[in-house]
Image (cartoon, rainbow, N blue to C red; front, side, top):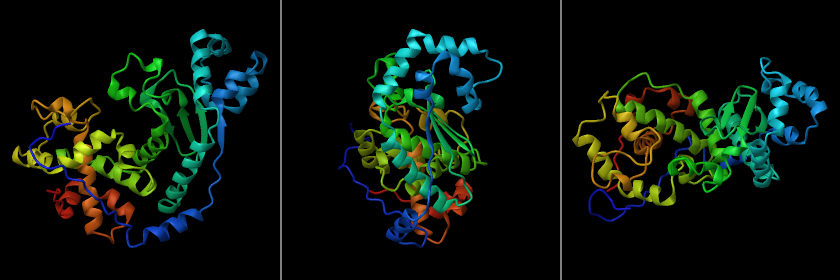
Length: 323
């Protein structure tokens, strides 16, 4: 990918604040937190169910069987050729969920460290007819994961999707998606309409992943390819200059969300090289602002940071992109 202006790529090394605690000490404390993660493979149980045992399955998973649907619907779904193929592909891709359960257990250990009042939900894996917009559903007591949304970007089931969407349908992002679902529960939506407030909101979601997934690479947290992340880092100064020179940060223009924040194949600077840029670049920039705030305010506790207004975080962040 080319950069916005000619210059040497800049590799940004980010030092994350640990809110007064050494990272190693936090890791030790997290490791000692007991988490009993219960995982139920509903997808497998439904696939192996005999028709006469449907009432038993419904009794075990009542929340997955809306009462307005008769048993004939579920029996037809079990026998449907496409549904059978879908479940076969899930079984092939996820013969053992243990590696992902380990990742989820570590995630919820971090959740309990920072949010001790939170419950650890029961994990239920299922198929969702590739409903990628609801691939993860998290409630106070349940975590539903649609495994048919994690078969890999080149899977034939995703052949008619836009590539930028299909690329995210990979098991690499499964635990990160769960972290995102949790972040959306605990990070209040922005009360201000400015672009910088929206950017900082998404930056908070990503910064919370820094805390909950300290071992995950940034590319996984934001669902960028390595090349896209390198482009964002190399162009951080030029992107910031673009926002400043066009006075976009405090703008409330609704068109700015689709251009810089919403999922898209690329960001829309309205320049010739737009199609070489990664989408959601405003989220990436908001992430760097929140990181800058956390570095310069190490005594601010995580929950306090997440509840601060976006414009206040920006003003006090002293954010300066690397040159």
